[in-house]
Length: 428
Ligand SMILES: Cc1ncc(COP(=O)(O)O)c(C=O)c1O
Image (tube, rainbow, N blue to C red; front, side):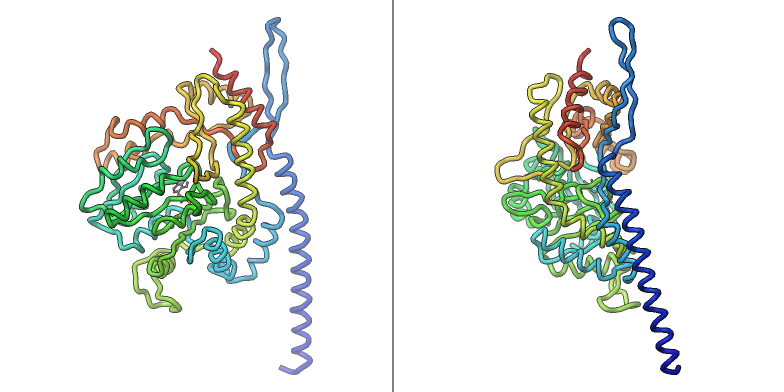
């Protein structure tokens, strides 16, 4: 190729790059507008009709309040677009995100995965847990906590939750430890830290592993440590409704353990040996994080503390407005030394269906996390023969829990409106 042809192609490449940048800028501007709209006007209008005693009807148009609202802002969109210029899977953004997430949690390492479920299952496998082993966990969680145990080839063994709250009871867990128990998986449900001080003691005393399911608790703390940095490993989900997302599915394992890190990096990547393309030392999966998702995650992580602080403020408004309201029970407050992150604000009521329906009529979305405890879900009934009554506290929670709207851009006025509607809905 002559020098002039070289220059010709170089110019074309440069022009192309500049054009590409202009397109990215224009797209980012359009997306900024869309994001602003999403954040200032998040809800679709909801029409409700009120019939007065004199028979007259008023119709009100009010904004619908969703249960959760993920935030994808302009900086995240710009970051996602530029990550398209990287290696699309496991590009530079992925490694930077892992480094930053580990630093945030206070662990030496973080290994990203395709989901929170994969993070849990890969961690158990990286710890050498497989057929013939038992893993102790709570029946009151998202079903994936126990799926991960089955995916690793082990058997889940359940212990009921604490008398107050919705997390695994350390004393009940202790009673269930047997000769095959290899690990305990407590869940920081709703963003509320599990009783890590006691669980760490039990795991040490019995010589078993402790894996934190922190899928709902990014940024929560227990006795000066971030969750995910207390046990042998922590597992996070970035599913869009969580306290932070990657703009799609994704997960992360946090650990100080070099062997777990090495094994997890291999298992999530088809079992590959480090720095090798087609030499596999283990049986693995394709469960890697895409660069675009990691780029979004890096920006989300910068916002996480502010978002969690907003959740805290909203939780205190809920508590103020709902204190001493008959017919409902508020979520437990943290013990000193613990800091939750209110992934969900969950009340308990025996009038759940009525309350849910009445709030829905007023344009307020609520949720139930979870209506069926894990042991009563079909796969566990079938495989282990569980029936009603096995874990009474979890079963009664599943009949009473009701999640109220909670997301950082929810306004305090909206919380007051939700609480007013909730109090009305409790009336006969
Ligand atoms: C407590 C808990 N564990 C595990 C998971 C699984 O995470 P993912 O949906 O990313 O697989 C979730 C997510 O919903 C969860 O809430």
